[in-house]
Image 1 (cartoon, one colour):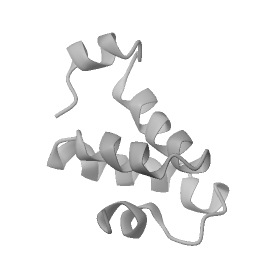
Image 2 (cartoon, helix red, strand yellow; image 1 turned 180 degrees about the horizontal axis):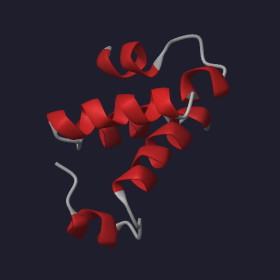
Image 3 (cartoon, one colour; image 1 turned 90 degrees about the vertical axis):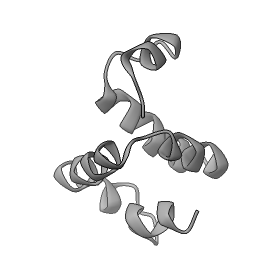
Image 4 (tube, rainbow, N blue to C red; image 1 turned 90 degrees about the horizontal axis):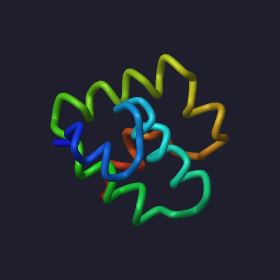
Length: 75
């Protein structure tokens, strides 16, 4: 679970910014980092991440071949 202490340590202001960090890691080709960051999320935070991705149309925006759910769950 990503806690406020973890966010503070990473100098990230919110869980949504942490979600952006996961997205940016994938976009920049940092696939291991993207997966490791995602693994830090609780089950509820993971589901909220997918809602965030969908609400912001990030699957299409990033032009990736796989939707985030498939990309991240393949591990």
